[in-house]
Picture (cartoon, rainbow, N blue to C red):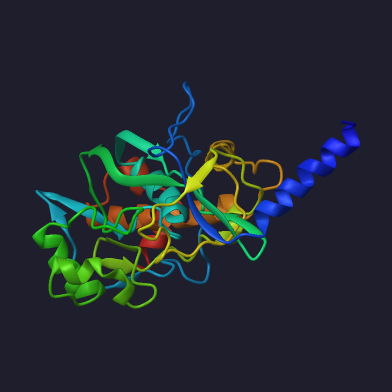
Length: 298
């Protein structure tokens, strides 16, 4: 077969794949980085700030969660959700300034095609089982449903009460796991220091635009992968996002907005943790940009 004929065959095969509509999940457990890579190295803290809305979409609710004597950052969402991987970049970057993650994995992507347009879920961290240690703040992360839309991580009684009071009134865990009945925008939600945000408005799908190159996806379980998840795509792989944030320079083809958007959101979360823990440590909470954001805190 000539080179030209071979190329045409490849193009025809690719086109055939794109005319189908399907939900697919990459095989295996959440993806791990290559040996020797620093998964949570997301670059030095920056001075990025939203000049119009210093606290972004966070609103004052008054109530907050604690784990023991520590204030908690509460993150509740869905495993493999549409916004959860995107928001995870800012959450991890903020929390790394107050402690360390002992175990963290990249989210395994969900890929497919709709109407001839290929897409993949946004790259990000899987925060379902983070081993996080800090003297200043606790991290309470709950994925209500797993990738198969089955109940996954049940919140504690305190977390369920918090969710019902400040996020959306639910009578029981069974009500909460029926997420299709929750109002749009309820999940994911992030709460810390008496403030709540339904998602991080600074980070958008467009920050991750680009051709996806990653694990070969397989068909999702028949239980209905993606029923409550909405993706826009295509998106770039995890390694490209991580490298861009670590170096402060977008990998070729990635939008320049990625870096300031993630850093702006990370600075907001950092400031709210400082508000919750008595502005410690000073090396973090004393940064000029954090002080500027804190002036907007009640």
